Length: 229
Image (cartoon, rainbow, N blue to C red; front, top):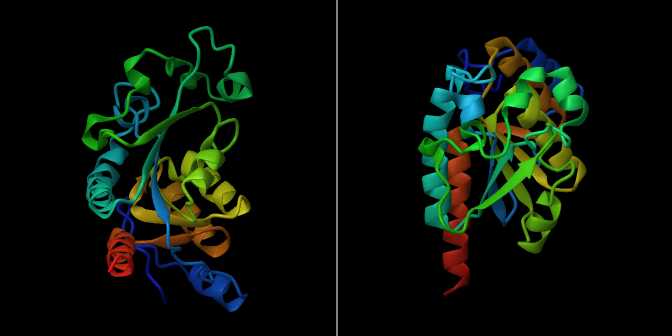
């Protein structure tokens, strides 16, 4: 059985994985030639327990993401950040805030919409603001990626069962190879974290370890260097 490592609650070793594989699911779409790292909502409103939405369960995935970002920047792989943020009057919040009132704390100008300094942006990174769980809906993400020739999205961030899941599903639907790094995504619920990684790996994305993701990123750099000779 393939075991996908998870920082939120141990390894995923579920009979469901074998059942999916037996049914012709869990095929690999792999990494393309031009990946990007998509850092989903590692903003203080999600990572600081002082915020009603925040959770310390993001600490371990953030540490892993630091290594992935270092590898991406060394390899020249683009990094895109997302955050959830609304107008102060919440006129742009819609039903998302009606369903989850705590989201109303994520107003533009507040600390809760700032990217956690542990995974701080660097020059050349791209930040987009979203108002839904998917990083694609109502944003410029598809255009930004297409303009850069991106064919693979390496998803890290939070939460596994929410914005990571929706983004990873939509990435596949929009024609991108979708990769989720199991130990670089986090959730308030370890149970939902594991369950959603299993389901994503079965149907929508390749769920990989950070070691696999970093190796793929480094291979991109090596291929570019070889092609430049």
